[in-house]
Length: 289
Image (cartoon, rainbow, N blue to C red):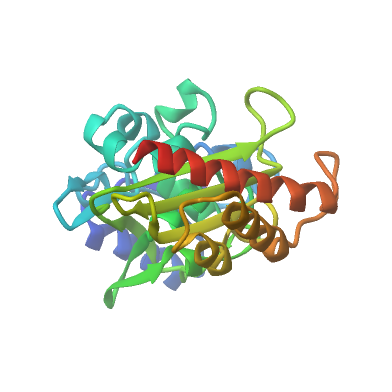
């Protein structure tokens, strides 16, 4: 029988100390925020002994601040809490579209976008939306805090950039400027409860005359990690989202994709679909503006 330990720190420093203690004793520690990925993995493919460090009771990881310049979302805030916040829904609707796709309504009472990001699945629905909204990950360690752009946080399939003695405190976003909005769309074979064949997050800023002045585009489920696609953004900037501009953005997303063929779709199909999603997400973001 494997040995497990459980700790529930009340501060960032206590959480870091727990991680260090496990590491220094030659053991293994793992963060629990919502647990919706961790508990499934422990019951199936990853049954090894470890110390569970539950960060659900830390004030900083439960902090939600919607400021004039910056939005901070703590890593332990459940998706259901975010989805019910009217102010956040108005400012980052696309991000919440991604959050709302993490499992069922019941799962969202525990699941977090921070955990979705840390789990680092190529098909994580919140990840392209986090990247499209220029998210910055705030990471705690014994030496203090550091920040990493969301597009650099995931480094491979179920691998992120954090060391064993670090954990994600939360994610910062620049508060959207006037006439800015976002959207996230994915394609799945079923109508509910499936993982993405392809996904795309788009954030746009539009001038009064309908010209796109700024754009960010990110794609998911079509490469080992979610990808920022600057070429797609460049195709949209300066346009009024005419067909040619949308086609160029779609082509850039298809070119950036490096998917696999599996039972959900072929390489060619995924490349095509991610381009279509880019066009549709851009139009949805523009409609919201």
